[in-house]
Image 1: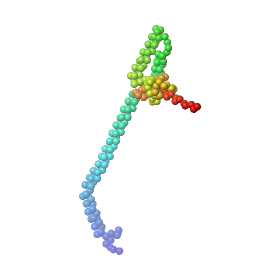
Image 2: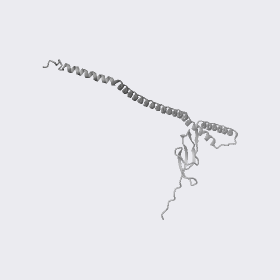
Image 3: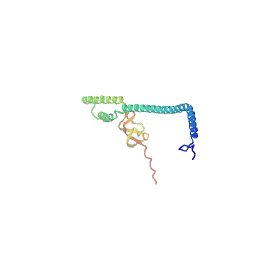
Image 4: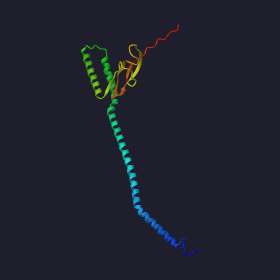
Length: 199
């Protein structure tokens, strides 16, 4: 066995050289280290800033969308909040109109004043409905529109174009353009073509 080797099997001169090489390497790393560290930190900071900027832009977009949706919901609540009550009042309007169509002696003073009261009440109802965006759908003579009208019967009528409303059985109503109740109508249809009889 070689006496110059220590217990671990390494020569003391080799150990000294390895230690010196290690010190030189560390010194070289320390000389470059502050600049490299600064560049690495700068790159990391730029990544963080870019990520946070992206997050801020996303949050701003989400807030704008949320604000827009909230405004639309509030607007719909204002417009259509009274929809259920309006639907219930349509029966009252129908009854007032029917009361005016009753066949009575209109020259009788007691009946005359009663009818005037009903007319004034109906006029007040119509004005109130108009004030809150409730409009009548009275399509007599207009083309049939399935979004606004409900066809109750079809009837041949050579005097008008096919698919024309020839009678309104019950007026419809809309609230700010949304149908509360479709108008119940009678619609014209084309006359049946004569069938040729074979002789």
